[in-house]
Amino acid sequence: MKPSPEDYVAIADLLARYCITLDLDDVEGWLALFTPDAKYEVYGRSFDGHDGLRRMVEGAPGGLHLGGPPMIELIDRDHAKTKQNLLFVARQDGISRSAVYDDELRRTEAGWRIARRRCRFIVAGGLADRPTR
Image (cartoon, rainbow, N blue to C red; front, top):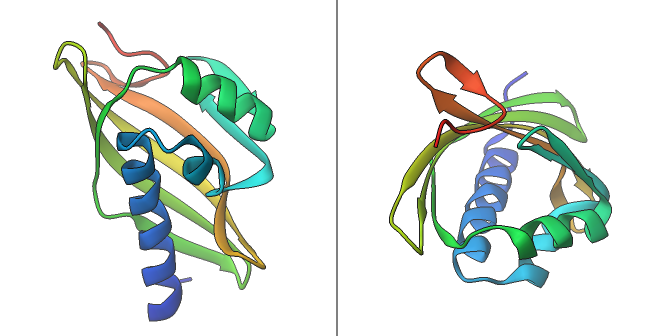
């Protein structure tokens, strides 16, 4: 089911805020984009809840996150799935990685939030849990 124009704008804004808060090292702003019970899967690991997400982001390299426009599928009034590509450029060495995010979103009293995010890297053989370099 396609989202309403209002939901599309709200979800696209959520995903844009995800990239910008990371780029600005705004950990609290970034955490606020997730449900309290969120799960983030990356590098073959799962980081659960805000405490797990905080540990993950504080240990991750900083850089530029360029997210493409999301594909959005509304599951029902309060749940959506998205898919979005990403180009990450590391702050330290300028090395870039490309990835695809698969998300499950939930509408909350505060608006749309990420309930689950899986990051897979684009490698020569397709998508993988880890980049090749």
